[in-house]
Image (cartoon, rainbow, N blue to C red; front, side):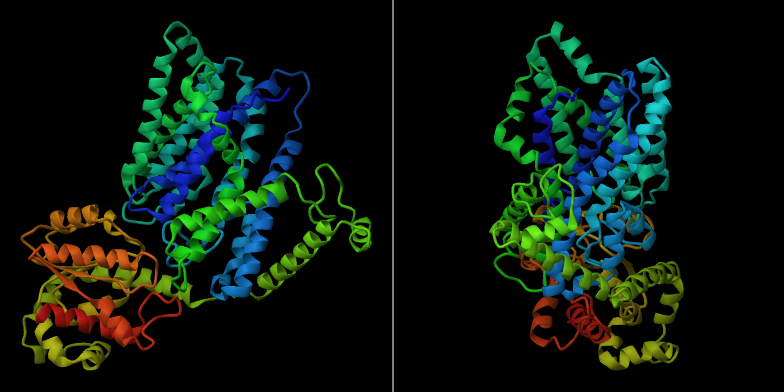
Length: 623
């Protein structure tokens, strides 16, 4: 007997997809939107476990391997087609995105994408460094790994305890172990991808859904609210729903609180919200059963498959700015359109063709299919679709065969990590730096290494004479990491705190640590905005934390991304309103004078670009 379908949950799926999309496009507004993927894990844990409970009460043993392969096929084929279309597109138009794509594709198709990314050092939260169209497929990998592990574990293990309460306590134990592992493995200040991707550290989200099933929480709600008035249930569900939404505006992807209890709290609120939306007498359930939203929610899988490639190509890693890169709503409409077409053709089979996309239930027959296609009485629509598949799969093979596996981007990543460690060591040896700088410039210059002398000679001794005795704190992202050698040479009495992928609205802990360690100088230089936009309020919050008694220089950004103008506009407005803030208009200088100053990624500065940056910043600070 098939499970009852709760269409209200489909609406929740659609809303979750929107939250995930807006997290990527507007991280500074909804910094915890990445948590919305947990909704899918919880829903899966709930309904998969309910199905297993029914099978356990049946006399017939379940065909768990067959069930797994059916689930795998349901996810694998749409994912494969989307991957193939994306590979065809970047082969034709964006060769730069072919870098290391082979490993991303093979790991996605074998449902190991999450571990491949962990082992290769990729990051879900730093797509600017190494953009990939298939980063988001970590979720499909974790889901299928849980589908491989959980059904036999529950059916042949946990369900041996006849008492559902005991089963629940066992599952709760696994939840706490997984959540504890997330908290222990996470390291503050480091990229959280390991705990966000790991099957071990994400299992608790799925298992919370399983807890709903074995403890019959939806049924418990029904029993409780049969006695009470049903409107109390709707109030409770609304509070739970908006509580989980509020957490998405509070929790941040780099915060220790997120991975040490915050995500667990979010998942608990979502799980109880789902239980509330499953109640037959709930008015809120009827609202969530509005057919247009349900219809969209039923197509959440292709929406998920398409959103990230569109985001990377036309937003995060866009090469040229145009009306589409500047229009987020147009991109969302494109995501929806591609998802609906994929759903209609690949999932619902409204348009079929032999071999590549046969009707549901039919077998793939190679020679019979070829005869049908080349039969002049065959359907023209099937022939067109067949030709499209041949072209797409042929282009996919070429893309995989020619995709480069070694790139300057991976070298840059390693260099940035090494440079960051060197900067931390230099910061610890600030006393030695000050001792050098206290001598006259000639003595300071003579004691420099040859490479550092060359840096000063290239930029100009006149500038170095003015800056070498200045004390400042530089706060930045990977661009600042790249130019830090020049900063230390020209400002030997200064501190550089720069981190790859840093966002302005995630600097609260950074500034607090600098202040507590006595490393927040009277002059502070902030170079943030390359990784994404921020609001005026977020900038003002950062400035207040640094202190209005400080002289603060804000360096605007040159990155050719849709958010550049917004970032620079916010910086200009802030500096015009505050006397202790000074704008360093690096972008205007870059646009007027750029002469091959960028690395191959089109974002980070090469050595010539570093020289130009330090000159512009130095001139602004010494005038």
